[in-house]
Length: 592
Image (cartoon, rainbow, N blue to C red; front, side, top):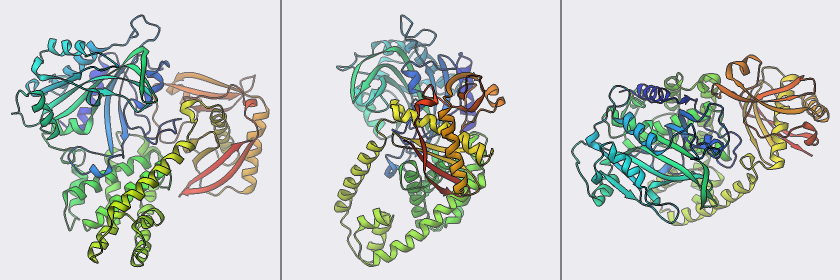
């Protein structure tokens, strides 16, 4: 079964069970600068898991784009990918219902449907029931042993000796130290077909050796965590299920890894023909990192020295290093980038909404820049510069330093390097946490004001500079706002002054800021601004900035929050306007 059919079957299966299908959110979280990327299917849905009403109802399903880069050193093995797609079905509970569920569902339906989709040949995947294993939560001080899930699995025909109770480190899920969380029940599949019954110890060993692999996870979110501690139950009971498309595809195509499936096959064949010194791990790193770079750029991320841009730059540079080891050129990488664009174009419209030539030029410019970095770093290396300085000041990767040192018979003190890097990263993380303190996710008053000013700024740019201006990305903290936008020229001083004046004029006009929910088609018809490349559900939230007569200055797709009137904002001032990529400008502004 091809990956495209798996996606389609999953969504149709849950649509038939009264789920509304929603599009994937961007890889960059909306209004949440506390995290760099959406790393799990549940992240874009946190407000709804905490009680906010979802415009599409209580039952939804999607295939969410995700990026995780915390384990880049593991990329290249059979199961790690920096970009992956998470199939998920959701029940958003009802805090007003007596059972906390209402029109949603909980363990009985979630487990039954997971089992049915995995094993049903007509609607689902038709997997062999005799090769399934299940885990449940063993209980601790936060929640009891999950007898209910065990009973449901046994009623479906899973033998008791195939159900393993595991501790919180294995069977308790949360997105981090804060937010909704709860026990989970995971499904595993025997990849060989001849494992048979296992003792708890045998199951743990088979999982470690990847003889059996996890293919689905049902999370029962009825608890809340704060500052790393479970503080009690939520008012509503939620279901969050996840099945990684890459892993499911490998199972369905009888492969040990998704790198050998149709998700990579076409690109892999084309790239392999240019390889001079083949190495399986290096080759996979090039495929993985180039695919992730393509997805990030298509969602508006630009290479840089901070935040998402830094991660993108690191991925491209790691890909280049391994490409060099394989005897590939930067032109081979660019072709690989374009092949992935073609492969995903029909799946995610963000790839087409942003000009594909512009995307490939951004990628090419970064590879060329790193080529020059390597040349400069080589000169510094010859001077005997500390590898830590080479890495942090000149962007020269430690892998390359080690390779060059080995050629010259020089020993690199890796322990000293990693110690310095750990201290450096700790400082960076502290600075980042400080920078994003009180971000939109926490509804800080100053940040909310800047968020509303951001809407005014976009509307002013379109009125003063060009109606063709589109937002390409944004970042808003309590200190300042930042907007990236498509524009073919540097703004003149006169244009900047006119934009500034127009925003302040609208602030003084005491305009109302009003949120309205409406069908996507209607929002598009009235010309509501949407983020360039974003994909939206059938019902959307639109914020209008208008006067008492309803005359609108700004109307924009947005989840909020905002002030209720522009009079609350203060004086708007542009601090800086600059280029960040070909055809993309950036403005940083403040409220005084």
